[in-house]
Length: 351
Ligand SMILES: NC(=O)c1ccc[n+]([C@@H]2O[C@H](COP(=O)([O-])OP(=O)(O)OC[C@H]3O[C@@H](n4cnc5c(N)ncnc54)[C@H](O)[C@@H]3O)[C@@H](O)[C@H]2O)c1
Image: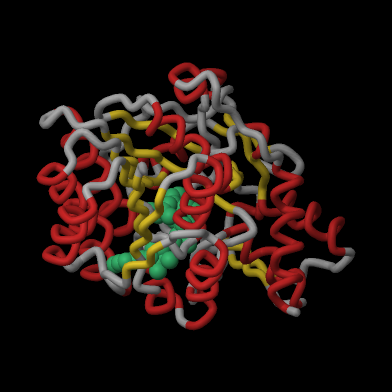
């Protein structure tokens, strides 16, 4: 039986991957998570509920309570399991949180990734290794693209970016946040284990990854947190850019489907911009309007003139490379359907 090792298995992406590989592809699934999200973000970031859901619902799911910073434990686990695929989705995922916890951030994102890559090279170098990277590896360089201001959003004025940001965009000489820096280190190491050692690795530079199983908090999980605020009548703070900043949103299921496509036909040392693309993009103002329409509740919010350091004004992913390499894959979950699922999930969790 094929075995997949998923790190960050209690989180948004990890849990979706566990479900998809178990239910749809028949893999035996081993998850690694130590609920570090609750340490990073406090009780609202707790992911134990999701771990318990997987243990309850997925036949044969094995949870490993391991910190990916624990090099010996990771080397041992991968040597024992020799998984046929590794999906690495454990991380300190917040742009803003990283500045307060630089050692935890770098040790988790950069060194944790190295631990996994080296463990894979020693035990199962032929197994596809999929790494969740981020569009923050581009730093704030996308903000240099000339923009036009529309009524509810910013958009690229340069037709060269009509399809969004391609993988060839520079990752150098811009402000990344410490989080962006630690993710660059991991992203480059993932590419290097592909290019230098010939391993089937890829780094997926995520836009806004979202879905009903996110434990959204102010510092991470844009749509999930926004919906939660709406439902609870809590004020959502908009940081700069007139609320017209644009994010492209991709449902975690479409992320898992792409990972499965890569595992099925892996390439070496690849990078992909994995987001919802222009069709699934929205500004914060547009997200407010969509959620208000679904819940019938007004979105209470405040506005702060100060944008987040290094925050993108407009970002959507160019999906053409993914579609060209994996023509069987495409976005299946529209933005509207995704937001509806998030509304339903928070409503159910509040019961
Ligand atoms: N959600 C997004 O919008 C987004 C966007 C771009 C990239 N990403 C990337 O995708 C990946 C998954 O993000 P997510 O949204 O699922 O995050 P998440 O916080 O929901 O899940 C990450 C999981 O990893 C676990 N974890 C963290 N540190 C750990 C450690 N040291 N040892 C073991 N487990 C640990 C956490 O407890 C959590 O359950 C991350 O690499 C993140 O940077 C996410």
